[in-house]
Length: 211
Image (cartoon, rainbow, N blue to C red; front, side, top):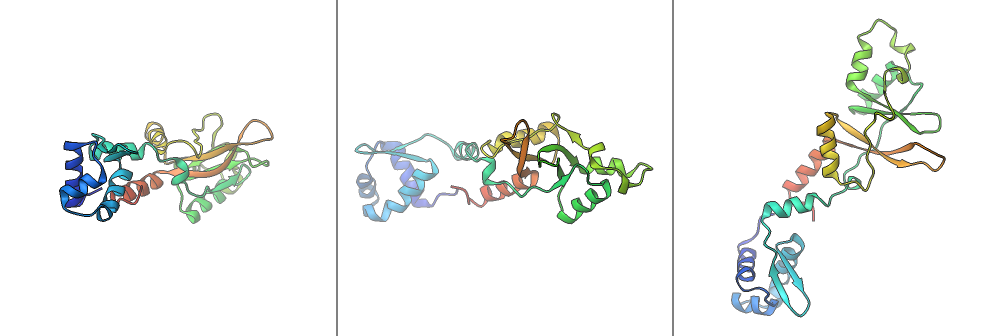
């Protein structure tokens, strides 16, 4: 977040004189309290200042980089998830390839007859299968997919920074967002989080579109 010259003045005053009331800040700037109210609200919401009733404003001591890090550490998967693309475990490799291209995704999630997650298909999985001599229309994806429990998953309430670390550590394009099913062990796929979602977050941060 880039501060205006007046906001920078306010931060400097609070840093040198805090805790200090809004009226005292306004007096030093020769402005009214009402004029400063939007600036004080922005600085407080952004984390540069903190406010306590009957005490006033004080400087948090955090740099812009620290404030950005704090902001990212509170963003959850739910804020940036996408719609999952799911195929049945009996789907042929040929149809899975068509689905991947039509949906323009890098990962397909495979479910059984009860819609429980049983596998994941990546571009590499499908490419490897297509290099073989078998007819792709006759090979079910269940033969080539990565199976549970070797699938990395996440949940809606997980922090997006933790998911980003998983994507880097596992060197994969995306993770299924899952919820536990009531009928027993296993997961239902409720979303997906990918490198594209992480990129969208980065763009929003650069455009200061996250509070």
